[in-house]
Length: 447
Ligand SMILES: Cc1cc2nc3c(=O)[nH]c(=O)nc-3n(C[C@H](O)[C@H](O)[C@H](O)COP(=O)(O)OP(=O)(O)OC[C@H]3O[C@@H](n4cnc5c(N)ncnc54)[C@H](O)[C@@H]3O)c2cc1C
Image (cartoon, rainbow, N blue to C red):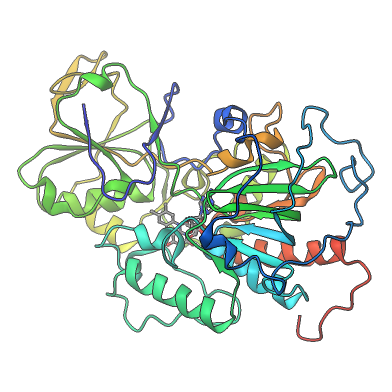
């Protein structure tokens, strides 16, 4: 098998399930299995030392949450043994992890709630530059072919033309946003683990020194956790296998037969493009859910409510497309339907050296390329030491925070995994953290 990728951050996660449709479920195995953090004292690197100045570091004052409780007076998880922070750790009220739509809207809202940038909160982002996942989207994705990028709070997104590349204009907008609001973003800084300290704060370990915080807002999205299901024979395939995150342009497939796997928006969009230069086969695990539309606000609310219910009950968030369906009136879908490109086959049973095969009825299709448009999982492996996974298989949530832990918010997760949802969740998390960490504080007039 040949895996090829451009800018793939990690090898795709391959799990022993046959979950092939677009899926943003969290990866419970990762949640439990991530390795223990490295022992010993944690040096502050030269890069991070630049921020470890008196102006940026302040003395920790005890939170209003009693140690050993979850903020509602309930005893906390006994398996989550505390670790000691060290004198080199930098101390803030809130660490935000990730600077995509979710992290930026949270940072903006924290500042509005009276948290001082750098002194009270920081944003740690693993990417080299602004833009979150948008900087990695494939070049042919234009502003007009996105499902709309909503304004970040406080600054309208005005790209000028629908034909511009999303991977350029959205990062430029985010860069402008970070500058204008002087958001305290540290990059590239990758968070490797989050654990509890023995005095009940959070220890945030990174590849560039540690932070301790009274609260954490995780806003790490899904892009770094591409999901590929496992099928028998996959390792035998002699052609090329790639995931949506590796896709660059249809031209690279000219003259090859491409099997696209997945029932989500990315699959239909990539099929639309690739079918213009070569032959394609589309396979999905379940029949696609076509929606004649329009997808109005009521339908949006209902879709979000279904995902909300899942995460409240500690189930995996599941596929957003499974809830919303594929909108037939979307221009690229309409066009692909008209050209007969979206004739779907059920999921194959096996992968062979030369292609994909079904048992019943007996069928084989030769393929040069398997394109897995099979979605993503939440990038939450670094939270493994907190043992968040519950019996439902996911992280039980109460609004934007982890159930029973009002100091740990997941923004851009589950029902807020969209640009508009992330905006709202970031602002909600900031309001809750102000009430929790600073119950006595006067809300600034502008908030
Ligand atoms: C192909 C595709 C198209 C989409 N199109 C749309 C659309 O048109 N409209 C829409 O509303 N939504 C869309 N979405 C959903 C989209 O992902 C969200 O709307 C939104 O952009 C996600 O923002 P985010 O901040 O949650 O995550 P991201 O934009 O992924 O940002 C996460 C940030 O966290 C950082 N990070 C990750 N792990 C770590 C770590 N361990 N330590 C430090 N930093 C870390 C990353 O570097 C990144 O900067 C799309 C999703 C996909 C996959």
